[in-house]
Amino acid sequence: MTPEPFGARLRRAMDERGPLCVGIDPHASLLAEWGLADDVAGLERFSRTVVEALADRVAVLKPQSAFFERFGSRGIAVLEESVREAREAGALVVMDAKRGDIGSTMAAYAETFLREDAPLFSDALTVSPYLGYGSLKPAVELARENGAGLFVLALTSNPEGGEVQHAVRADGRDVGATMLAHLAAENARETPLGSFGAVVGATLGDLSSYDLDINGPILAPGIGAQGATAADLAGVFGAAVRNVVPNVSRGVLRHGPDVIALREAAAGFAEEIRVAVTAA
Image 1 (cartoon, rainbow, N blue to C red):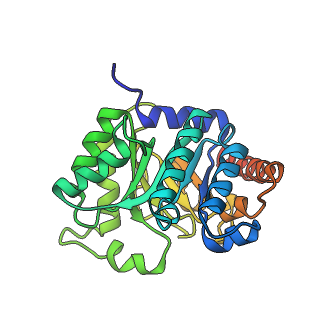
Image 2: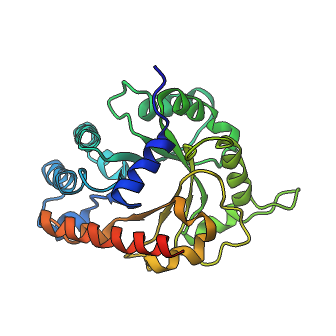
């Protein structure tokens, strides 16, 4: 039986729960703010609390793999459990691992996160296309087979990204626009939403020179602590705003470890985003 595609599941989750992605980013300073030690026990307590508070009510949770990997195999075990519990509670999980390589190595990365029976199977994976978009083919194929999705780095908000993403090709189109065009091709004729999305920073300002109509989701970091607001979304993303999945991490997580406070913070952001998207 063919699994339901990620894009369809994401559209439904966004419509039912609101278009919000909350990061699970247990970096050392945030663990300290929660009164937790920077060790595996602190990592586990942090992750369990976020999942308990939010997995049954937000559309997407996005664990940052690096903050788990730094603790070795025990950290990966916590990540596996967090992914499983989040998905069981109804949240879609986007694994923020930004993998990118060629050939059999890319295939192995894909099998780690996109094979349905893998311990770290996630609904979608962030990937880097900067060995050439074609290098992502193993991940694209496995995602399709397993009803999963990808979020491809296209126009990121970090200042360093511009030296690659704004580089102009021989055809006059810059690299970021090229990635968006590849994604539009992947999502052609998919309904209600394609499964291959772009990562585009919410802090980038007017992007009207880019065609963001990729018929797929746009993961938009930058809301909250990085300075962007829900009210900025329509101005940045234009007609594509309905398919934007704004990511908030510190803006929600700083309210922990109190479960009620985490829920209230997430609900507040979700409502602000819903109002902004509806008004656009």
